[in-house]
Length: 130
Image (cartoon, rainbow, N blue to C red):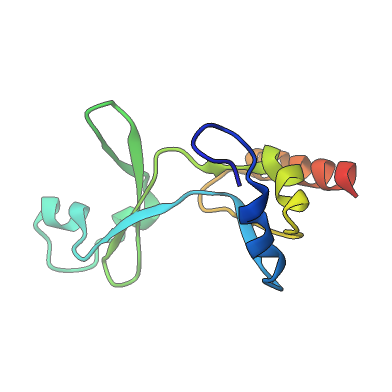
């Protein structure tokens, strides 16, 4: 754990040492919120499941021009994902010093090359520390 000044805090690390089977997510896009009603469906003013969100890419843009990906589910709810993925792959060594040995990655809409690249980075860093 790093404090707000970027200093590694060993005392916080001891808490994790007592937790067995702890898995730390080191890569993935955070789901910011779930909208109960489909934005696309409401714009089209349709009452049926249009499935457009399953066949197309839709995003919301904020004031800073960051795009937040929208993914619809089978019940016409929309999940809004963060514009940038959480990427802590380069911190694997720090987490291992804290006693964390189980890491998770969560892929949502990365393409095949991105998935390969991330997995290779994780494996390379884990071999380096082993």
